[in-house]
Image (cartoon, rainbow, N blue to C red):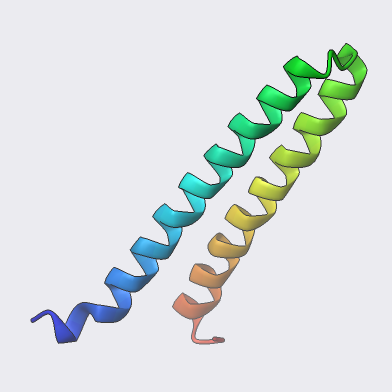
Length: 73
């Protein structure tokens, strides 16, 4: 049974790993912004860039699932 589901387990593990990585990056950025006393506009730009990176990753996953469901991938 384990050998039959190895690809699914790898995919779930990689997605969880990316979620943890994005969380740790966010925490590091938050710490740097607080210690550097960055103005409000600068903080907004930094968080927007981080959010767009996460959104792009999520969009890629959704598109991949959609294409594989349609038989295109």
